[in-house]
Image (cartoon, rainbow, N blue to C red; front, side):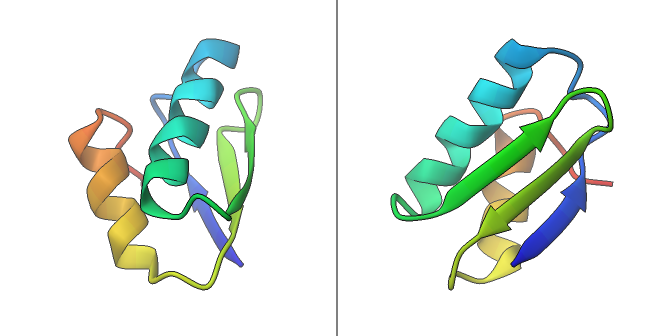
Amino acid sequence: MIEMTIPSMRCGGCARGIARVCAEVDPAAKVKADPRTKRVSIDTMQDRAKFVQALSAAGYRPA
């Protein structure tokens, strides 16, 4: 399980965008993104660095 905070996540649209980016890294990942707390949980076996790189490239840099 990967946990991270994404300060730029402000709304449900951002949360859906984050989920789409994570699905590109691992289509089997289960993603929970909460714009209120700015927290993202990713249930995956992939490496955290892959998600950080993909999210940062999409404009959702983890803190």
